[in-house]
Length: 130
Image (cartoon, rainbow, N blue to C red):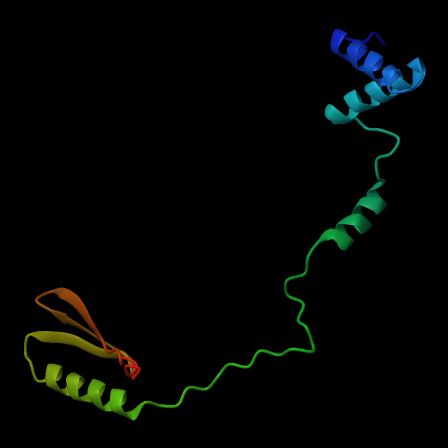
């Protein structure tokens, strides 16, 4: 197989590093095969590829048995619940408001007025630091 000018130049460079001409030519031809995706003698067999894939994939679903996440139970906020109930009662008395619903018992009320949809979100702020 005839070498291109760039490959010949690479062979000369490798010879300057101490490789023989045949070693350098083999390296350059092997590099060319690898760059063009051709099969080489060092490629893995299908069985080896399956095993390599098994060891290189990350199983994100695997859980660490030493550490378990527990979802924290929130204490019910009676103040917010009573405020949402009072706002809901107040809005329910208005004839212009339709589709009144409490989305979250401590947080949000959804309703329609004049064909438009609205929502009220109740936010309790933290106390200011002294």
